[in-house]
Length: 71
Image 1 (cartoon, rainbow, N blue to C red):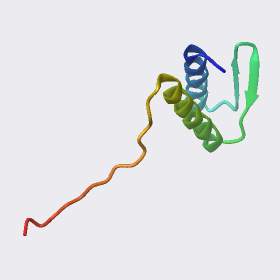
Image 2 (image 1 turned 90 degrees about the vertical axis):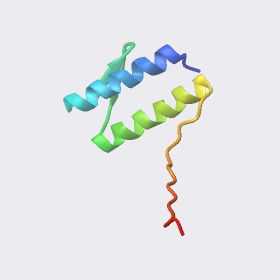
Image 3 (image 1 turned 180 degrees about the horizontal axis):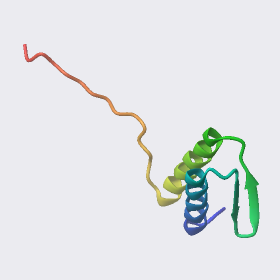
Image 4 (image 1 turned 180 degrees about the vertical axis):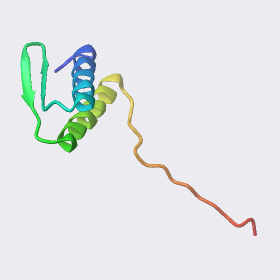
């Protein structure tokens, strides 16, 4: 299992790679090739979930809004 610092380093590498438009990420002597920006986004989301689980918190992806007419 990866430590929180390893997960954050991988996430930072992916974020930097996404903004640069390069399809290859290297960290700790390892290299990963991605095919599309969507694939990078999915990898970042997976790392976010793993970081949250390691820290013991949940990621809320849903917001519910309720309204009334005041009647």
